[in-house]
Image 1 (spheres, rainbow, N blue to C red):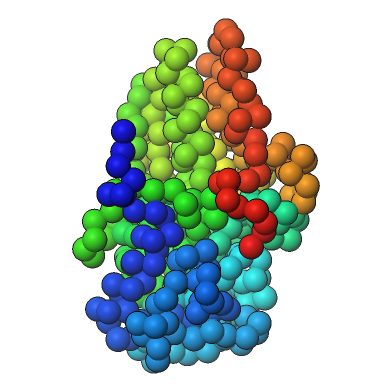
Image 2: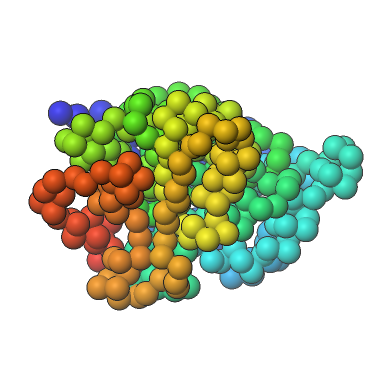
Length: 353
């Protein structure tokens, strides 16, 4: 059994990466609405303003304006980190992100770069509803010039964020709110997880589950259930969505010949659609069977009674595996699907914010 005292929370690994970067490099700046708030944006920026009072800025609700300000700072040699409490807040600054940050390097023939990190908190959370619980990774991944990463655990969260801050390109850093209270082993020192590289977190031979962010945890839970039915699952954590680790994806699915992409967002027009296209374009007669699952094709309800039916969960993943393998697992009903349906990430979470 793990000793939690020796483990690090996801939110603390994020804060540690920011702190170490600011300590190492005086050009790193932290900004955003509520970054010096007593709750420190779910604990991820807690007390950093006390360590670096001249480099942490609480900003007004003027997202387009302060994103332009951050881009200017990046072009002049600074390394800004913008933190949004919800991904939806960033939508007010898409012109700056898509038409400025993403394109400066291209338009200057590589002479100018925008080393900007934009942290976007995503995903379900009791009461968030249609406007504050979306996972919009596909929108940002569509734009050339941006890098997009999605950590799934405290270790890769810290390593990916450290790599993102030192990258010369604008990086969109997605954090699922349900991951902030998860924990794992994290070195105290500076280390990097490379951008654009996925990781096989469990080897298997029967089917590949391709996932990212929160769906990695859901796939791990599903694999434990499937193991009881003698199904050996391989789990691939994408870690980065742009660039995608195509070679690792193709290597895994060519081995198992069957795959399910478990999307964190909507599967229609989504990340899972792109991955399935890559797989089928490189199938070359191997007859790989591929399926995608994700959010139901609807806006997210506010009520927990309805919201719980929108998201993929371990049992829905198991049922998808059952279908793709052409099997019927006996006594699957003994696993209570409602155990995985809650829209409350942890017991002391009592409201949207």
